[in-house]
Image (cartoon, rainbow over all chains, first blue to last red; front, side, top):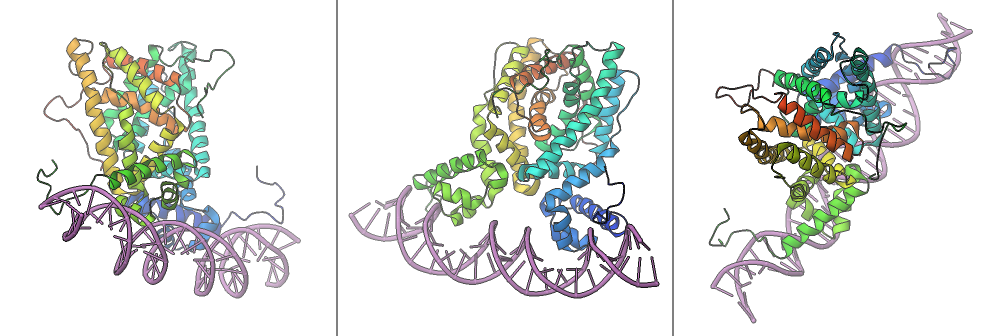
Length: 216
Length: 216
DNA sequence: GGATTAACGCGAAGTTGCTCGCGTTAATCT
DNA sequence: AGATTAACGCGAGCAACTTCGCGTTAATCC
């Protein structure tokens, strides 16, 4: 995507720019660790990172933008498994999610991102597209299971993956308790049982794939 | 719990106080409808309700407090069913939740409350205790099913109820798409299948009931 | 009815968050 | 190396949010 010929009016991503980005994101992460999103201020980030406040506003526009970029930066820590069987994959993925959110700072982060999405429309777009993308990737895990004959062909991969992730976010955002290993195990078992029972069959079996009804 | 003898230094909840409360909460609800939590300002609420800003700050401390009180006020719209069978109850409850969050204003509201909890510790406490309470109430629905012999005795009611609610909040907060009837049906079927498969068996079968491990 | 005093209205003052213009630093290219 | 110009540092200034003191309204009690 970057311009090949290094146009004279182009950007300058190397060296100092990359250093400040690194310093700022780690500062945001540390600040989230102590005090959560409530205590996360542009000035705090500026102090800890050594970057001036005006620079933060210029590059990230607001605190919501900072938090969103941190999420997309850290999300690569949750790998997509391929164990050979769907129950194995579900269990592995659930454990990865559980390990990821076992860190309180990660819970604070996703909390902050959801909170950011409630205020900043741009953050909402980032959040939706980010999880939409990961949903498609994880969906392939389910598609492989369908090919192997573990599930019926009308199973909707994204429903399965959503069902696997949902309990963790419920635990963090609504119940507001830490995630533990038990949640991972029970969720993996539950989704596998539900999928086999046909709970995640795709409804719009014609060309329709995103069945939004009336309510906006 | 209120003092019986109307102590001279007591509060004064009748008449005007109740009117302003009503006016303010409806104003918050309407303001959430257009613009969401992002556009929700104390001044906007003051203008629409006709109540002075200083009064809002005095009674509710901040916008987070307002939103929390609105949630507890509107939550009575989700009834707890008793159809005679657990799959019937699960289906009915899922439909109630789906109907409740079919209204975009309700999605904005829960979004706002979660966002509030991320910033204000008091709001976080309100949110946790609120859902904890409803979890216990809905858990009786599952306990009745255990008594009827529909599920094994070691089933943890709260896990079942959490599993039923989780997909809706995932849809609203993470996927950021409207909830529809299909989600209700698929969730009810999924939870029923998972519960029968023993996915929600209580782990701490000794006296332990809240098994938090190491991570804080 | 009248007295008492929560609860509210009002405007000013204090605090914080955010933006802007300009000078400086240091990538990038020749 | 030297020139060009993104990206950054700095502080002033604007705007929004929040608080405070005091006078007024209207529940509640007698």
